[in-house]
Structure formats: C-alpha cells, structure tokens
Image (cartoon, rainbow, N blue to C red; front, side, top):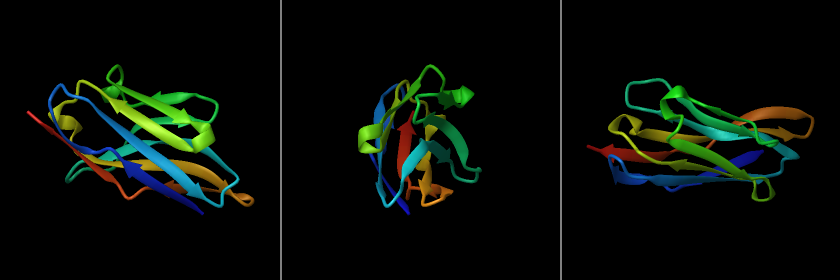
Length: 119
C-alpha cells in the first residue's frame, strides 16, 4: 500500500504564495506518477498538476505560469509551489499517486489540505 501525507496548506491573501508537500510511504515498488488535484465546495475534483518519475509534467490551464510541480524521487515526495494565488484557487488540495505494489498498479490519495485565498 501507499500512504500519502500532505502539508503546507493555509490561508493567504490574493497574490501570495504557498508551497504544498506530499510524502509517500509504504510497501511499494515504485511511484510512477505524483501530483495534485483540488476540489472546491460544490465542484468536482479537478487536476492541478502531475509529474512522472521521469520528469514529464501536466498542468491545468488555469494554473500554467503560476504553479510549479517538482519531485524528489529519492524521498518519494512531490511539491507544488503556488504563486500569484487567486481567490478561485481556494479548495482542498489532494495529493495523488500512481504506485506499484507487488504486480499491480493502484491509485492513491492523501487526506487533503485546505488552501484558502482571500481577496
């Protein structure tokens, strides 16, 4: 199994910055993809950014140029540097991972961390 523990959420004013971290632990053979989704009240969970273990990235259009995803494969940790934050970025941010446990790949989620951007 894979356990994901997030940190770094909080309250920030519009235009400010936050950095989220997520560390994976457990009895897995590999973590192939790590990233972030967010879910605002009354809305579906949506992709923010993901990164493969080879460094390929994928960003939602709404965060391109403002958010940067990075990853430390040795520590099985993914980071999301968020800049120029907007009130519409307010949401619960969930860490996401695709990992291999034994012969199977599975999808795993963190417990979520709240990001609130005030106007």
